[in-house]
Length: 244
Image (cartoon, rainbow, N blue to C red; front, side, top):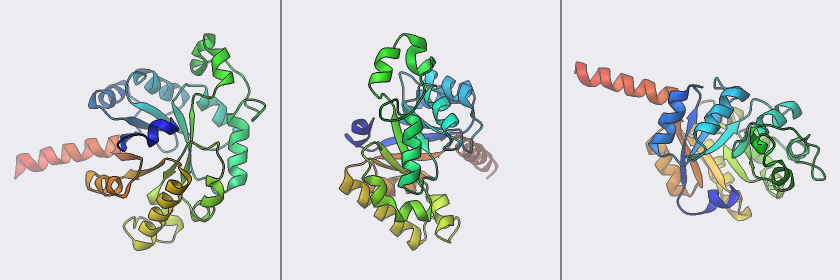
């Protein structure tokens, strides 16, 4: 996944918050490179996230943002068989060490061995426990995470950084003002640090224009919008167009 994220053109994705089969199939049919399955703010749990991963197995890469950083949550979402997990609001190297402790099998960590979709329900267990087949993406979206980024990037167990611009704006004191110079300067600095460390860097973009700006800056993977918001905007455009 790390090499895939770095190779070629920026990888374009979308945030999925609605845990419905039709949404999964629409995302797959649209031709996105990856899908951000949101179990932090969206309606997903392990079962619905696993269903999304199964539907998209031959389509876009699946990255699941988990709801928290606890050991139980990490191992339960790792077992669903996503291409990677996104860890929200990571602030320092101590949190990274704790995440890796629960995400990696011994001797690198203390992840317990289970039989689930990730291990082919047992058929691919041997290869799965000896070679990591999932990406660990760290989300930088707080002032602390931003200031500790260079130390975080020295950890070679990390497969990518994902910027959360809205939470970052709040943490920097300008809540919701993503276009504020203080937020944009921080975003550019995060990207530059990732480039120097050869770590893939991604970001959320609320619309196509913002996504194009981030693409031109050199981000490796970009999530363009949220499924619910995109549907709402489409519906509103239909009403506007037919009533004018």
